[in-house]
Amino acid sequence: MSNITFIGLGHMGNPMAKNLIKAGHEVTVFDVMQPAIDALQKEGAKTAASPTEAVKNAEVIITMLQTGQQVHDVCVGDQGIFNQAPKNVLYIDSSSIEIAISRELHKMAEEKNIAMVDAPVSGGTAGAEAATLTFMVGGSEKNFQRAKPILEKLGKKIVHAGTAGTGQAAKICNNLILGISMIAVSEGFSLGQKLGLDPKKFFEISSNASGQCWSMTSYCPVPGIVEKAPSNHDYKPGFMAKMMLKDLHLAEHAAEDVNAFIPLGAEATELYTRFVEQGNGEVDFSGIINFINQN
Ligand code: NAD
Image: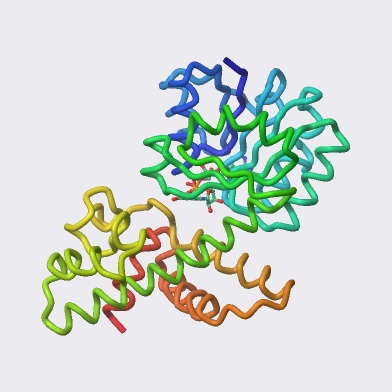
């Protein structure tokens, strides 16, 4: 059993923190939204009034925040946890953020004797609830081995991607595929319906044919097909469209840095930008099918 501090208790952080409590860890939580803290307190978490207070007795710290800027502020801002964290604490950042910010934090952590890994996830809120996430981990072998037993309580596949920042690189590339594939599935179903195909019949065919992919079989954007998909819950996230857009921007910037050609990534960024600009930033990203149907 470890003393674990969990910061960022949103769609992903809430079920992840719950699973750590269930696994018998002593979990202290912090979020800027009080209701998010209250929800975890009901599940048995200890609470703290600030991030610095939350990490005072931590053996492990996990952050699950929206953006690189938020992670940077929480770690090394005015009230930054890096100044207060006990020596040799293990710090796991599971947010999806810029590779450069992650690498900068790795460097600063090392100077403070903090063992850091970047460990973003895939699997969505259903994976977070069921503790079946895939973790992609960047950092030294020693830090990876320390993080692995904790991450195994949250996920079913824990992969050491390589050195500092490579977890983020893997996540960025994965979500580039996801953003594009969600649009591809949406286009297929939208066209199919306009051609007179019953979406359930088309799902039965395509999920057993070469169009099959996660966006279709685990997260189908058409309601009435995959029970747990946000499409069955009025496109309530899940994974907000503005977060998908953030990840597509991360991919674009990463591609610019290394001169990589990602034309479909650029097109996906354009479509999600238009979708978000129409007021859909907090709609699940699979809601893009409605935008495609209407255009
Ligand atoms: P979310 O917005 O639901 O949760 C983020 C939480 O962080 C919120 O509760 C917010 O109040 C809190 N927060 C923001 N700033 C803070 C601060 N300074 N101190 C403390 N708390 C703060 O987001 P999410 O969907 O849980 O996503 C979290 C991360 O995981 C993102 O980087 C996202 O890209 C990634 N991710 C999400 C999913 C998904 O399906 N939702 C899947 C894989 C990866």
